[in-house]
Length: 373
Image (tube, rainbow, N blue to C red; front, side):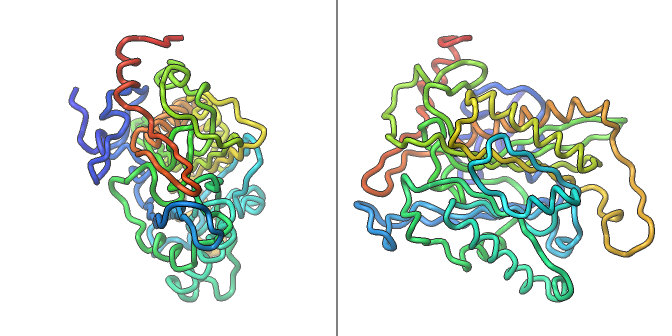
């Protein structure tokens, strides 16, 4: 069966994992992206400036911010059922204490570098006040902002991300096909000691005669080269490329979206399954890694609208969740591989160099069976 062009490449023509020929389990959505979930949109702001030695406050700059809007702009104030899970907590995802308390998410999600996480969170509130007048007049907002560390390539202590950049990412959010790789918050990221960053994928799931979508988005910045597994084969130890000298084990933020009618405890269960998708690519979740995951459902908008009285809803029973669990694992695995394939070499501060995943060598290994488990 022919692979749709949108599954083969990003809008700019950058090759995706399926376009390279990497096999994956499951049936992807129309776009094979988190934006297959109706109403979900993604925006980026990328900052790449300068080269040479690090001068704090002056660069070089290799950073950015990603914005994920879980509902259309005019519905952003309507909460969504959500759940989160921390596989290893050396990181930050703001707003999750309240999310865990009430099982709900509201407002956009932003993902950026570690030292700009607070700015992205605060800028999101300022953006919401400006774009949605009156919605926060008699209420508070606790938006979700996540981070992974880009300080090996980026002047992270120069705080180059500004409020305006966050506003621009939020305003740029749209549905449709997505760019991947070194873009937005993923700009300065390293995954399995190759150039990592932003990746996305989706899966179709049928239940009771209806079709649903599970979409995933990752900011991938974790793992050692020797751990890397693609399509079930430990290819990392066989791929020849320079090894960046970064010492930490990195992090990953993963967001799962679905239009399936699920309850908060069920979405927390989906968030836990992200761990298995991450593990498929080889890592065991390092001590220094911030591996933090969130899942939300766009269903139940009427039930969650703040209008008092009683609310009713229907949901998929717990014993029927296995196909959704499988979809999460499959989509996360593919999103991570996409973040590697849809990428390029990058040189950052102090001449630090990170190679892109060598596509031809990977494809040769997969075709030959070399490195088979």
